[in-house]
Length: 247
Ligand code: PGA
Image (cartoon, rainbow, N blue to C red; front, top):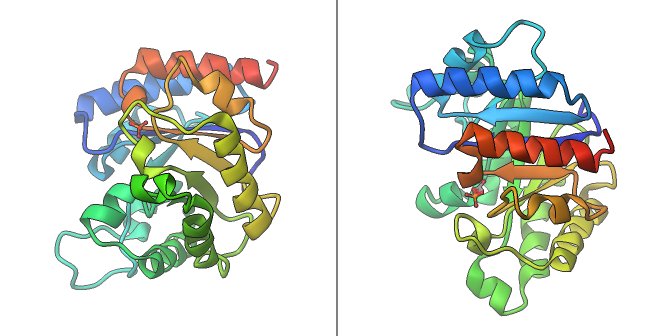
């Protein structure tokens, strides 16, 4: 069951060390314990999830997540990691369909749905990424692209996943859409999949812009890449998210 709070998800991508992941989880978890209106999820590289888990007390509010999983439960898939294995080392969430995987690993909408089904079967909450590329944005095709990506997700049970709207051209570039464009995209997600779906925004979220992004009524949180790598920057965004919740 997905709880309605402001979500802050840290996506470390292929960065960090085992020691840093543990220390980061400890500090992030401690800060979250003082801000109950914010739900935090830390997604380090998969092989550091257990180190992050080990650094947290059993009562920690910080959840852990992975950045991908395989669509099969187990089998002869050299180098792959299943959703069940991620759950086994302490993950509760998994980012799926990130544009870096759609682009570089040729992941299709069908792959994303199959991975989401595997994640749900393993008890993980998928964080499903959608978003248009730069040329599509420039051509005014955002709504059509999102429409296709969201249509593929309609079979999944509402309430068991989160959506992250991440315009591909905003990821790691320092550029973001206007807030009214973010609001429109989030409204489209909710009108397609259901008003109760939590929708996070991702793409160049930083301490200096998170406040205005979270202020949009349709925005339920943020998926943060580059600015999540340093704990100081993450904790600054946590404070701003908590202020947004009025705590
Ligand atoms: P960014 O990445 O915050 O570095 O733009 C976001 C993401 O890829 O999830």
